[in-house]
Image 1 (tube, rainbow, N blue to C red):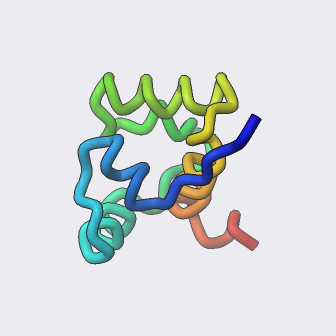
Image 2: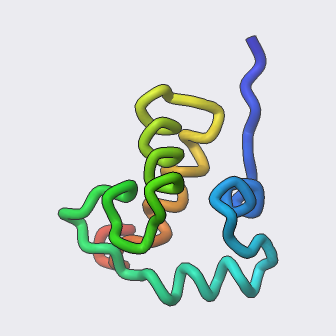
Length: 82
């Protein structure tokens, strides 16, 4: 079984968000830092469909899980990234 590795831009496309570097940076700047006690999929800025995609991608350990984890880290406070 082969595993597919997705890029940030592909995840953003799946979420219906801008996929260019500037759009991704703007999204991260707008929605960071996400408090450590809020699960990524529970963040208030997701639509129900986006939250469901993120939740299912992690629960099923889908091809998307790795890049979803990267998004989760990118949205967290700097003190939790160390």
